Image 1 (cartoon, helix red, strand yellow):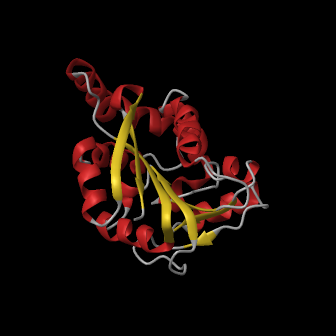
Image 2 (cartoon, one colour):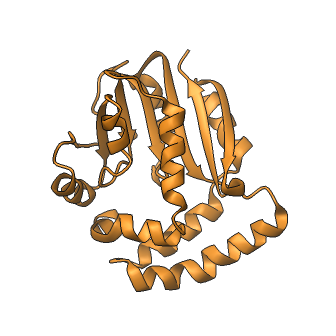
Length: 215
């Protein structure tokens, strides 16, 4: 599915989010706060758009994704990045290999999110950071209703107009509706062994930015 949307993935996301995805990416970089020379694993990196800011700040960033179609487009667009194909539930990296691990809008697509979170814990050094940016539940009930209507009614027609695989965005809308709310996801992050899980809302809770630390 993700191979099919790779060609116009970044453009489609920008249009569907009304440009908010750029703000969310900046928030992720600020939350990771990479220092020069630190090793950062960027999971569900897609074409590498989310990885570039880490490299520009001097971090050693590894964009990792299970979609070879995404990686192919990413390597053609950003040849300076060291893309790695990998399944989040069986990461091809050594224990404690990274100073920070981040995943944006990809955890809900992992077949077993809890196993994925454990793998992220395994490859992060003690004291290292986790940053998860994921769609969530708007905090204002009236806005939540409008947002749900947008997801289920407006998003698919827009996707048909601009995406190379619009059916994938029907799945996107359904997966967002089924995803745990902020507190529930924070509890799952803590339950697999991450310490001090916390979150802050972006765009009124459309997106939540979760942080935790490996003990």
